[in-house]
Image 1 (cartoon, rainbow, N blue to C red):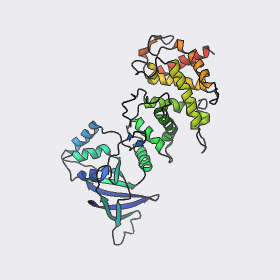
Image 2 (image 1 turned 45 degrees about the vertical axis):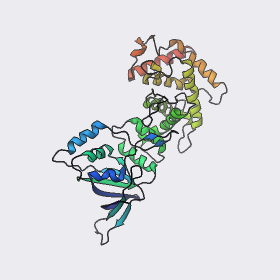
Image 3 (image 1 turned 90 degrees about the vertical axis):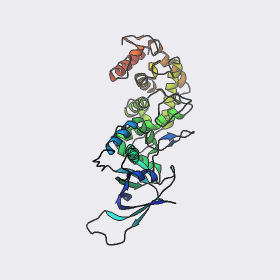
Image 4 (image 1 turned 60 degrees about the vertical axis):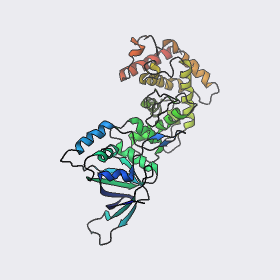
Length: 368
């Protein structure tokens, strides 16, 4: 088996081993894979990276092909136990408290079996592999992580401030169980619920939610992933939300069974009552639009807050409540009374979301 030998420094951060070294641009993809996010036939999530962004790659490539190139940006890799470090013999500098010099032995394997994965720098590596400076030395930082969860955790932490699709981060969050920054942690439970909603055949949202990892020919996703995350976050984090009582606080377990029962019951009711508007592309039905999902999602808290999820008659009661709204709704045709907008004029903006939500709640309260 071919091997790559490189001089490296070994460092520890909180007992986590890190390596830093330089390697020619052309050699990075010889031992490191790009682990693209995708799902298998059973819906299980694999990988972590988004698809190649050609414009971004070309912009980097254009710079790399100029004469005076300085490329100090390190590539972050996760490496497995097949990569071995051998300490250099000799006396260590007394002033160096943190690092140890040595040699990394890196096996060269076929794609899909390589001992390293790119956690940060995918677009840069793709550009480096195509540039006219194959011998350009590129700084690498690598951490040891055999398990995918640690790789995903680092990917999320590194990329959370970058312009990545929110859906990509949200799909990875349910697979990470360590402590995360509060802004990410607040999305973890909604992200996990969204997984159930999109991949459970019993769900009213089955196959309808747009996912970065999915290219399903059977089901054409029409609902923006973030639209579902938003309504779930609002209900979970608001003390008056119908899902709030079931969320674990101070270490207690979140009651996903009850949460899903409430969501399935309510949205199956929406699907049944507004059956002629459900499942259509947003240019044919504003019910599936970001504003429609937001407004009817806000009404979920109003209707379901006083409902016992274990009530045997819950479905008929919810359907009866939703039916009160039907005469006032213009999801696919006509003009919304009081609002003064044609159905197709409803846009995915905050003013329209507030306007439509307030209108639906007013009409619902009239019927009580």
